[in-house]
Image (tube, rainbow, N blue to C red; front, side, top):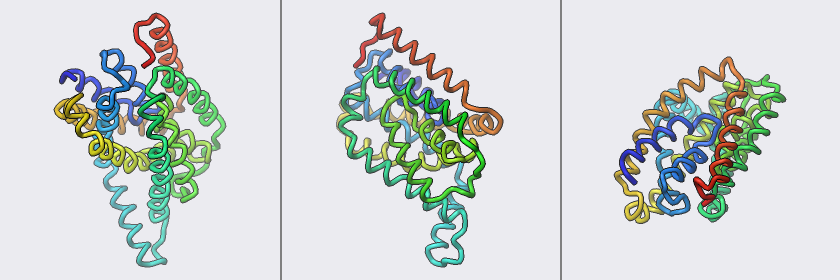
Length: 277
């Protein structure tokens, strides 16, 4: 992978990781247009590893929240009288990570095999757009962040695993799930960030360790580190923008964009500009 390709892919990852439009889908399409083999082990690993940059950006952005949750969790373990809403939120995040990790490990052969297809991206974009539309319109949005429970965490963590299908979008799955559970848009979006931090950091580190040889012999660690750094810088700005946006807007334009992107991909496939795998 050339350095300029890694910079472009890092920018794409940083912009799309937290928006409900599927970062993996965008990376897969972009890699395909660049002529990279999307089913190659090093390319698959690269796609997962550069997400760590975006997660580092979210850790920096939400550092005060993370410290508060961690402090409340440890305090609550020592003293039952200190088990407040922050303590419950910490447990909700932990509980949400568990099903995501378990499902990802079991489904790994699908992730690196059949799901590395442009038709999987198209399917994910279209099907989950319909689900997002329903969630955005039918969600009651009567619950704030302080109402999130461990049960919510488990449900959202399970839904987060749907992002293993490129095109679904991790943030799209968790935000939509949050809306269906009655959370308001800001609470659902913030919870999506909190669940994403342990999930994608663990995924990136796992891929880095597991595919170290493939990265070195294929994409290259230099390109991987460049993409990771660029994604982090861009993602920080993306986080700030998204939180401002959802405070006063619905997700209609994201849904429209997803459908248009799916149509463009179908046209490229039909014209044989790109192949499915």
